[in-house]
Length: 420
Picture 1 (cartoon, rainbow, N blue to C red):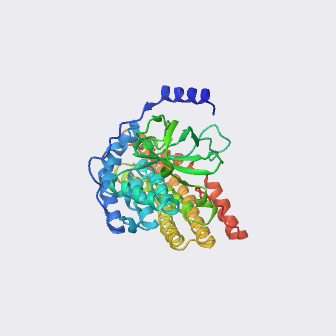
Picture 2 (spheres, rainbow, N blue to C red):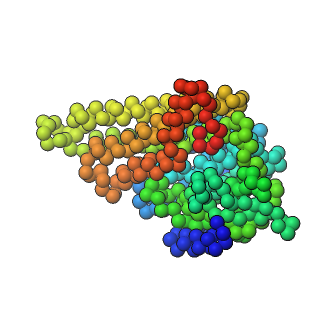
């Protein structure tokens, strides 16, 4: 993208979007979560709290700044900081369960920290000791990381034109990003960019750095409150201490991809749980029987009972696959190898593919079984299907099936990248 194109794109984004909300520096230290059990307990408490106005936030596309602050101040965004750096170092299974618990209530809030956790794993695997000490401490104190990965106008979403290079004795970063989930709420923005040699790196940039501009222009019909808009970097000055290698995370077997993907899978499993719970509540409370039946209540309809049973089985299966995937990812983290990483990638791909189907089915059956009344705006039940559908497009499930089949049928290990 040349300078003129970049300027025109930014002007167009500003015209249809809103400036990013002001995120002030932290004014207090976050709570320090001790272990997996406390992480799950806090997630459940926060989910109950967040449920109060989840419908209104989604309907009005209201950025959940207060809720994100509550979660990070409660220590939930720091749960994967390794124990040796003062964190809880929770298991991948716990990270997935925490994500599903929050997504059950509001999948926007489940998705927002995905790239934050992804970057913590990248830092653990690829950061220098100095970078680990510095950034892990900031996260423990309550700072949040947002992503600036994907670009538009390139052949694929992972073709990067954003670059950093030395000029006049200083490193300068320039580029344009979209789908920047989490950046509107972040203190630190993780930018995927190429160096002068074309190798892909991660650059940690403080939100307040001159030349950084965030735009709230996400207009997707689902995941409306994720703030997945645009970020531009106009000649932003950075230092080598903010940069570490990203490409090397996939040159050798590491759990980077499975860790990234199990969070996405957990969002879908959480949506499936939430949609099914709403189905049971709505059908039991409001749904009337079909006029051809001599029954008193909609929940006595044999077709409704059969469909509910089908959804229940699929949701329970998705939960089991998520737990299983967590076990495989934890093994890959403990002892990364070509075999353990491939096994983890396939286990996560299975739950991502199946969980997506379960979420789409559960959210569709929610409306079908609940009847016309369930489509009223006041209930906001359409958000489950919209959110499941839009979130599923992050990376196509059809490629999960391809890699799963190729693994079991032909003993072909999946590729190593952030989408499997």
